[in-house]
Amino acid sequence: MSKSPTKYLFVTGGVTSSLGKGIISASLGKLLISRGYSVTIQKLDPYINIDPGTMNPYEHGECFVTNDGAETDLDLGHYERFLNNETSQANNVTTGRIYQTVINKERKGDYLGKTVQIIPHITDEIKKRIKILGDTGNFDFVITEIGGTVGDIEALPFIESVRQLKWELEYNALFIHLTLIPFLSAAGELKTKPTQHSVKTLLESGIQPDILVCRTEHPLDSKLKRKIARFCNVEKDAVIESMDASTIYEVPLLMQKEGLDKVVLRKLGLEDNTDVKLDQWCNFLEGLQNPKQNITIGLVGKYVELQDAYKSISEAIIHAGVKNNCKVKVNWIHSEDINDTNVGKKLSRLSGVLVAPGFGDRGMEGKISAIKYIRKNNIPFFGICLGMQSAVIEFTRNVLGFEGANSTEMNESTPYPVIDLMEEQKEVSEKGGTMRLGAYDCVISKDSKSYECYNDTNIRERHRHRYEFNNKYKSDLEESGLIATGINPKNNLVEIVEILNHPWFVGVQFHPEYKSTVANPHPLFVGFIKACIQNKK
Ligand code: GLN
Image 1 (tube, rainbow, N blue to C red):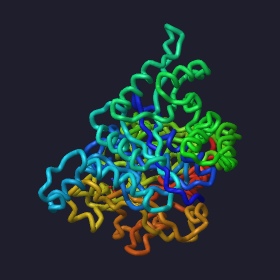
Image 2: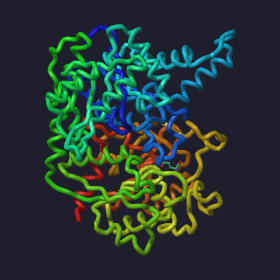
Image 3: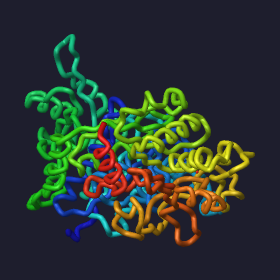
Image 4: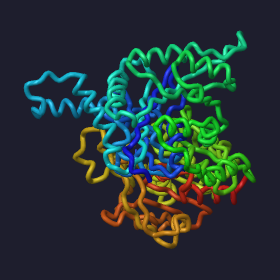
């Protein structure tokens, strides 16, 4: 669209964490895209890990994987789901990655003779990473979300970098600060003081926010907005109310109602002469809020206490539900709590069961008990990554009768290693960023449920694993009915297994959840939910 320079929107957060900077950034991105602009969103994370790939999901929630194989923050999942745009390694930068780059340069001698310091060396590297996306010339807007809360020691170099950038970019940058307006029930009042303090903290770092997005449980009246404007040096219409929403998918519409996109355009000197085309989004929301029917499915995993660990899976289920005009309730079932004795009680009333990805053997036997029950009782089954591997192990043990079959991840000396460490992984000793990561081709056989879903034989899906289906057992398994219906054409790895004489039994080595968006619900999730509806309990 416009040939004008890329505009940079920096999103910071104050008062508390978990205010939903990711959703606000994604919603603003969505509004700008619906006006015809090209937008990408980037997240800066102030921790020292190079990426979240080495973190436990309890620490950090899901690790989102991009097409180019970056292990990233789960907010990138929101960006992709809202914008229907792919992200890449460049969209997630951590303190660890910045320091690693600078220290490697120092060792190479790139700064020979100089003292290497946070300012300018670290801040220059941060600024370079922020501008990388804009420099591609592909985007009218780059939204950069800064993780954490202003005032955090860790975030200071990032804050200083965007402060400098604002001046370097002249009129092409804006600061949006997300803050909280708490309601004190004893006083019966919304309180603005924490917001004033958090803006003051930003000011101490030399940043004057242009727009305040105020999270609140109650509407902000005009008087309150004026007060916030006056004490935080922003225009009144740049005080944006962000009420708690019933679903994250409502937020773009709430932001549109508050005029967030209009204020952004005005402050950047862009004309507000483009229509916001949100029909498809509104249809999705309408479907989400007015389902024609309900079903309950189970999700068996070991991080069920923290549902952020399965963020993309839950969102993909929501997208697929809407596509099927159905509200899908998910029962989260801890795999450690399942055994052959109680499995019927836990699963019999569910319309379908998804067995989740995971690492290590905790809860593994529960997954196997669940799959045995699901297979025998014709309950629709969707296994993802470790869920697929568990299905192969279950089938080998209980249909082929190969006792003790396992993945070598769980038992190195299993007599039947039906899932084994990938050849290319055998020499790998470092843990960070060394799995089989990112998108790979897969060819699907026509006589399969997967083909019915994709309506295509050539697909590309994202991976994150070290272990794989052991082709030594392929013919035994296929003769007994577990068919490899998806194969990597380059190296013959089995990417999909199915039981064809079962209502819906599909296990995939890849992670389809990463590619489901509001605009394009993932075909396998859509097919799975459809099968669950047909099996409605
Ligand atoms: N732990 C298994 C592997 O590494 C599965 C990984 C996953 O579920 N993402 O192969």
